[in-house]
Image 1 (cartoon, rainbow, N blue to C red):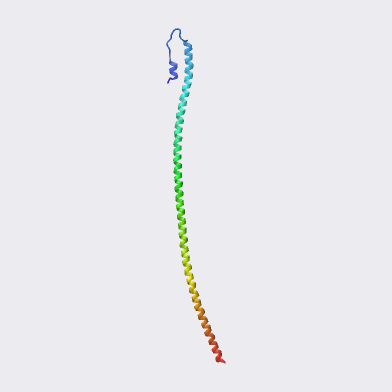
Image 2 (cartoon, one colour; image 1 turned 180 degrees about the vertical axis):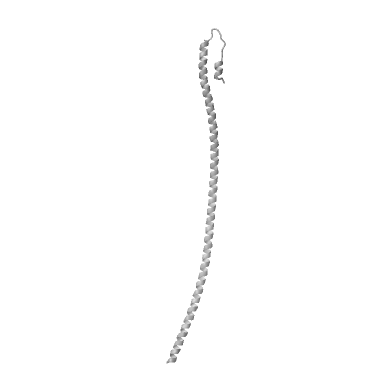
Length: 150
């Protein structure tokens, strides 16, 4: 690719009946100026493009990192949810086990209290029968004593 300096330093051989040297030099100066502007602009655009490509590369790296982070976060959330569900299931199982154990314990206590109540009822019946017998014998004794006094 030609540089603006190449155009500026370009010299043509002189001939008779050729172009006007001043006009050619003047035109070359215009071309040099325009070409220099375009050359600088092209270089700036290339530099800018390269910078943008670097930025895009950085953004792609950031995007990949973010995607990996999101994947890891999702996996972590799934694991936490799974562990929480397992813990909740275990808590429910433990509570059910404890409830069954308490129920069994209460049923055992109830059975014991029912047996105790039955025993007390039997004792009361026996006591009642003894009291009746005692009262009858006392009444008989009183009758006998009354009969003797008469």
